[in-house]
Length: 269
Image 1 (cartoon, rainbow, N blue to C red):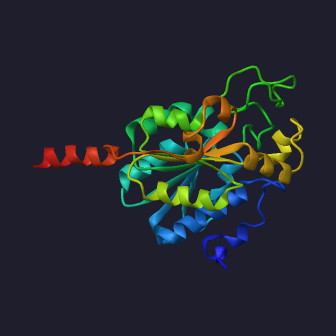
Image 2 (cartoon, rainbow, N blue to C red; image 1 turned 90 degrees about the vertical axis):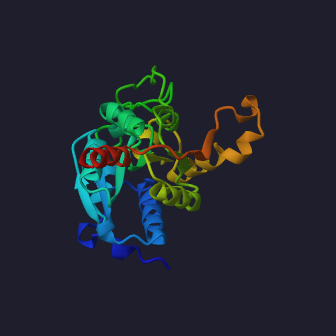
Image 3 (spheres, one colour; image 1 turned 60 degrees about the vertical axis):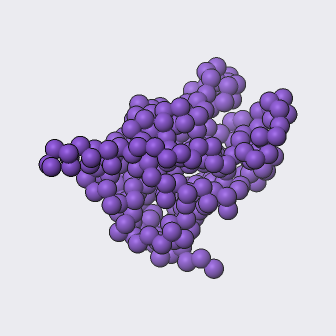
């Protein structure tokens, strides 16, 4: 059995996450991925902003930084520039990263700086009151949209791909084994790497939108998703509104910190 305790600050438990929240599954997938790579604790720095997902950094025994709302990637960029040997992992949510942090998100991807971003997408602001987030689906309810959201939602993975990320993957907490693989690949990839994780929020999102129990919401992920491999052989009509999961982008391209070092070396020569 995997020993999670060695990576946790046990004195910070119990967790604040609601029963049925998928964030704990993401946490465990991350820890298994780090362990399989063989990284020492001091080789990792985890940075988070504000929100349910961003509480994760308080529970793990790595170098950690719990920052201000939407600014996690800014702090992470500074850390990577100052100490490029660190594996810098950003833990953030759909509201934290793509609302107040939206510009930082697209520009970190554009720079292709060597960060690993684990973005928890639960389609709502879970911690701060159940407000509409940039990923709340059209027509779904939130505390700020009691009659249904009337705005179109972001394609988080597509946004990172369009901005220039080296690696983009999308997974669900139902598919926890595959999620672990995506996170491991993202950490090992040079450049900006995103893993978008679809994780249920039974409390703030599920209740308002009558999605049933936490188990029901996990089953919706199972039934409502398709792997990239399967989707390639299907028409748009056959895919419908199903979520495509898997590795969406895996490219080698210039990385920001390495390119900056070339400038320094050239000036010093």
